[in-house]
Length: 265
Image (cartoon, rainbow, N blue to C red):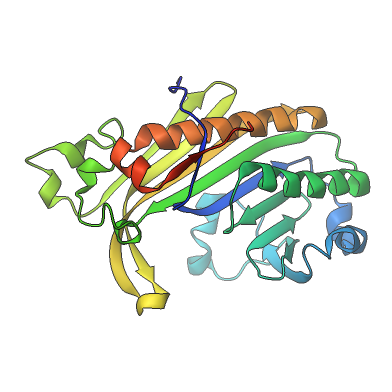
């Protein structure tokens, strides 16, 4: 799939609710055989809060049966390092390193944070190479957040290229749920692109329910990736992610989010 080449922008009214990047690598047993004290010491000023959780190393189809077959002993620990405001989380276990945030502002800032963590990880644990790379963007469009479009129908906000049902005069007024799941081949990788109508609850407003449109784009490559190649892939996924989102919305929604051009790419 080749997307149009849109101008790169930052939205003043950003719909992003989460961004996550992950690197997987061949299992490093050292990570779970001893606490990552050296790694923590190098990052704890940026991520002072420490937590840990247990992961089940089992296939999804078996995990779905866990409630029926009883408890399964967790096989390894994930170490989570959180920023002081808990809006950034760095996670490490014997198979992956992940950075997630709900405070995403610009790719360059996100890249700088993850690059710092990756450099420390490579110094401490020396992975041979990486086996999977992923970059995931979640955007939630809530019309109440934008005064210019709060009374607009979805057909004026979401492109017919991805949701033709919303543009059908016979069907659009009756749609209550709409979920689409696609895996798309891209230049240099693939994307699991899930999107559709969801019901959102806002705790600050007494959990009032509001219909929203969710875009969940998970870009990934599953193959051997040398350590020196990862930023070429991440940078490409970032640019493609922006193009995919812009291609999926209308000009009216684009303007309502107050786009500001970025001169540095």
